[in-house]
Amino acid sequence: MAIATIKTLILSLALLIASQSSAQEAEAPDQRMLVIGHRGSPGIGQENTISGFKRAIELGADGFELDLVLTADNQLVVFHDWTLNRLIGNAQLEQRFLTRSTVKDGKRIWETRAFTLKELQTLNVNQAGFCSDNDPDSSPAGICSYEDALLAFQELRRTYPDIVLYTELKTSSEHMTHDEIVLMANLTAQTLIDAGESSHPQSHWLQSFDSVVMDVLAENDILDAMNKCQLLSCEPGLIASANPVTLDVTKIMTESDLRHFLESNVASRGMTMVHGWKLMWWHLLTEKEIDCAKITNELGLKMHAFTFRDHKFAADYIDRPVLAPNGPVFSTPESEVEFFRKAGFDAVMTDCITSAIAD
Image 1: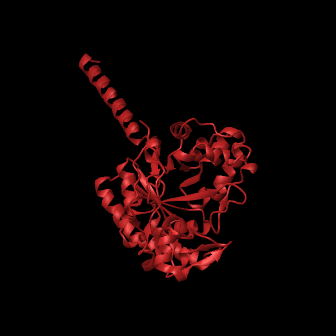
Image 2 (image 1 turned 90 degrees about the vertical axis):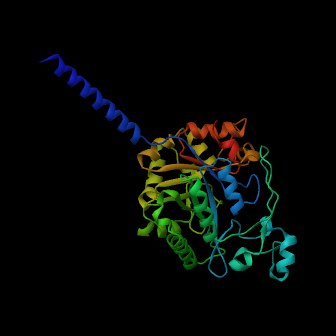
Image 3 (image 1 turned 90 degrees about the horizontal axis):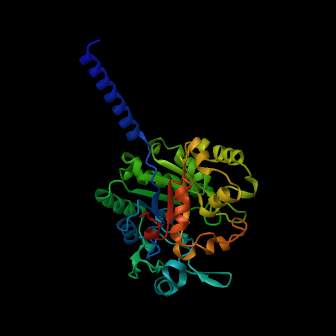
């Protein structure tokens, strides 16, 4: 064989190997752990408000989460609590809606579900921030509808095309009927479709503690390409929704136990993501020595953890001796986040954006 021919074959082989290597690198998944602003940026102030969402992205978050509650007139409002007291303040409520309160356990409360969307939009969120490394935002910000939040997200996406919106649907057996829960899920889906977001499925993660909600969303063919995330309740007595999926850590002893639970309660229901409290995951990783990333990868699930809070990074572990019997194990908020990054988590949800972002 001529030398020129041999050189040509060697060159061709080298090019083939290089192209395959490049293709493999292009196809390799992004292993960087995403940082999601929990309710926007509540560590600075004004959770679940448009100004808070913008602040989260400006601080460097990869996206933000918002909560939806159903109003008295069956509209979707961006709000977290079933009462208005914590975020609005009694003074404002007494001035606007003095006669609309009720008394529960000796305290005057204003129930969120008792108000229409229009009434709620007359109120300002006055929640103060608590992150030490950022200037708190003390200016009032109005309660917004889901439609307005989507418009704000679309505007942010023009500048930050890769950001994601994490929509959480809040339900309660005390405040909602089964039919209202189904209605809320369908309203959420229709609002996303009407806003044109079915053409941007990569921008959206949909989640709830409520299994009924997630099953309704999973059955919607138009939103089929959007990520669906089952939130997990993890301790007896801590019921966060009307139909929670509860992972009892006392019954998960081996990798096989966790795999069976996640396959039965998450993966087989059309979910692509599983989201649990950081202490639940920490317990499984350390106390039970279970490789959670290995199992979720095998099941094709993304693994997310909530909620990271600078002012409670140690106290959270002290408060839950069932999950962390030896108390706090991290010296700083940054070291806590780093533990989960090294454990293979795909995303963490945080109140304080800056301390969660890797240098």
